[in-house]
Length: 427
Ligand code: ARG
Image (cartoon, rainbow, N blue to C red):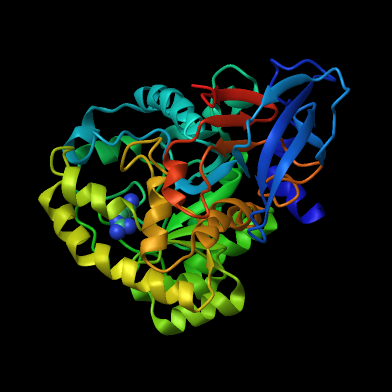
């Protein structure tokens, strides 16, 4: 518990949904509860919810309580889905040079709409790995205060880049010069960026250890930051009780990030066998966004993605999926991270079937998005399983997702913190 306190204090100490009065009870009746740890299904279960948390679970629980009742009619009930890599403030139709038209306040406004869409798609907690001007932190606050609707956010604030790097300081786009402040060179400058993020409310630190697909004038293979700088970032984050997520495609950047002891490698596209073995050994999570390539290569050009970026995607997309299969076979910790924002928010769940296509069982893919991410976020005491005491965050679907994981692309019921955000089960 203590271990998680620092990282999630800001989240857990905030109010449950203000719409729900103290002592409010809700009873979910006749659920087929999916135990995401074992794959067992318990039918005919009731779940009693009090003050936004799970108070009791059982076949006859709450039958004579005064709780408000919701009949799930035998639907499959799972913990709320989570995504370890989103950009709520980004829009999938504003890529490449179109980004020049998006101011930070405009991005924040998009974030409000995207947060609602994401929650209604069943994602009750997301890790936002980089936003301009700390817009994700303000979004988190507005959601926690009940002002706008959205998932619980674990926010990175501003991702940290080298000068001229992926993560907000790529060259070629003059606009990047106007949003200075994300680049740091040298261990102390990098530490300062970690401190600055902490100061403005970040829950997790994100930095970029290689170039990227979507940033002009960066290359996937090029390492960003020396090992010394990466160690400084990780060490500073540890001192401030923050976890570290690192963007990395090419093998050298991935290797240094693993050596620096980061908590998750995002993309991990060209991770070597040795890198996978090291990730397994250290328990490092691999947050491999194996769906997004389909969007980039089919809709990307129309969305403004530059030819230079499309060429990089062709180089990395399939390779990443092949490495994903090897990582799954090796038993690596796999997070469910999608990079939503590059593609449309609310379609995050499309990645489940991609993960199954590339080597996971449906249960493993669901585990990545529930128990796995909960562990990565340092929130295992709060989310990830249907357990008494945890947040009342759920999705429900009429069909069994362990038979066909794609049913999660259209959830019929969404609850977060005990409040219902969607219920079309009876339709
Ligand atoms: N934001 C990432 C980047 O620009 C997207 C990479 C997507 N491609 C992939 N195959 N995962 O690098």
